[in-house]
Structures are given as structure tokens and as C-alpha cells.
Amino acid sequence: MKVTVHRKAHFNAAHRLYRKDWSMKKNNQIFGKCNNPQFHGHNYELITSVTGDIDPETGYVIDMKVLKDLIKEEIEDKFDHKNLNEQVEEFADLNPTAENISVIIWNKLRVKLDPKLDLEITLYETPRNFVTYKGEKS
Image (cartoon, rainbow, N blue to C red):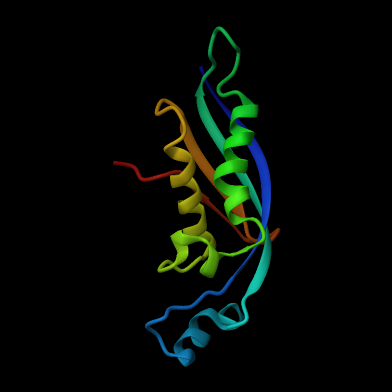
């Protein structure tokens, strides 16, 4: 029987939405105030959802302490109180939109989890704006 467990975490980070290959005018047209050259920040809420079979020996889908530590090491420690554009290498040439951040988070966690487990990331940029990423279907 498949069960989904969820772990909530948060991090605070600054970013700027823009493309280096576009003019300031075009960046302003597309990204508006999110293109502020001085950056702006969000209090991101992250929900990591792991789906799998319940282990008959432990009763767990995944040990929540293991998941908590993984999120802390791979996401919170690397993103919290950082300028995503300037301090997180994955965004050196990738616009740090909520969509792209969720994919990066998924990729960082996916490689650390048992392949038998399904992973879904929900990232809240604001209480009303959030994205979900479940990985690519082949």
C-alpha cells in the first residue's frame, strides 16, 4: 500500500528575475518589480512529499529524521539567507523563478532518496503563489 509522507521546511532568500541577454526595458516588461537590480526576498515554504510502500519492519515510508536531515543539508543550509543569483551555483545561468527553484530542489533530493520512492516538491514563494514539481515522466 502506497502512503505519502510530508515534511515542511522553510528558507529565506533573495533573488532577481532577469535575463542577462535581454535589455533592461524587456526585463522590466516581463519581470516588473521582480527585476529590481538590488534584488528582493521571500520567505519560502517548502513541502517535500515522499510516496512509497510502508516498510513492514519499521512501519515507515521513510524515516522522517532522515528526510529532515536531508532537507536541512541539501536545501536549507545551501539556500537560507542567500542571494540565489549570486551565491547558489545552480542559478549562475538559470533564472531563479519559483519553477526553477523547485526543479533544482527536486534534483538535489532525488539523488539522495531510494529510487523506489516517489518525490514531489511544493514550494510557496508567497502564501498565495506556489509551484509543484514531481519530476519528469519518461
